[in-house]
Amino acid sequence: MTELNLDRVDPEENLTRYILHSNNFSVSHGRVKYIVFMPAPNGETSVFRISNLLDNEIWGIGDHEVAQKRSQPLLGRADILAFHILSNKLKIVPDNTPLRHANITGWPIEKSEQKLVAMELAENAQLHLR
Image (cartoon, rainbow, N blue to C red):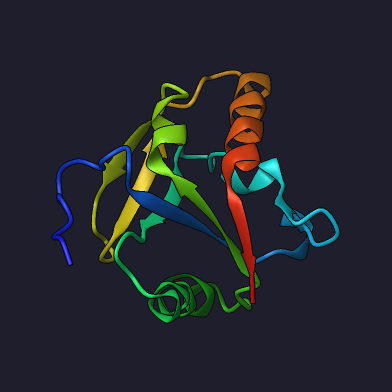
């Protein structure tokens, strides 16, 4: 297993955004909804770096670092290649707090522009349900 570069996310890295709300995905269409990738009020979108992890390890991070801390069930995740984020002129800033955590930053200021970018990301994300 290759080591994670703690300073930089490679475009070929796999990332995931954990999903805690049933209105953030469509089971019938098997897709992620754009709202999953919209930035929080602080202008960042939290993701985890999942390259070289087994499926149960990826779910374990979501259970322990996201769902338990928010006292909500982990319903799914949206996996996406870092390339798609970077190609939308966004940045991925690893902070490793907790381990493997990063933030998507550099979002446009206008909400409508954020939505367009988030729609593009959702289109390129792969939905995994529990």
